[in-house]
Image (cartoon, rainbow, N blue to C red; front, side, top):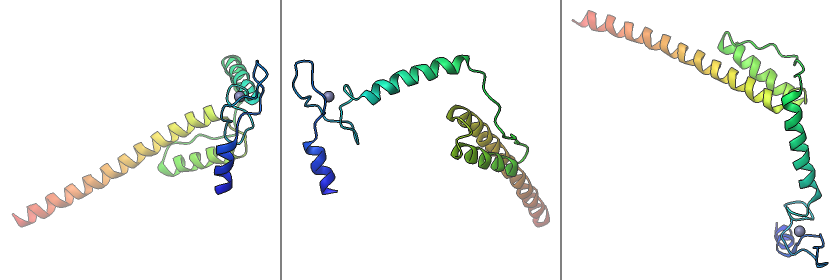
Length: 134
Ligand SMILES: [Zn+2]
């Protein structure tokens, strides 16, 4: 911990500025360069741009996932499958987010329906008890 802090305090960007001096900016965490000099940042920027461009054109490949939302159990199974596919690298973040969102919404709806059923049963029991007392 203390070593890390020491490094953080001392560390400066490894790049040389246009004027030929060493850059004095704080490097990015775990990187030898600051944000402006880190070649990885530039790569990420062009990568992100390219991905964005491709995403709009690319035809999405089907994913080996059976989306079932007909019951709470099915929703949970679907969510589990989504998790497995993501961890195996077979499902991209965008679709996993969309599918995960749908499954979670459906699960919420099933939960609500279940609770409504329970409330209805309790209400009818209550009215029975009240009728008996009267
Ligand atoms: Zn720098």
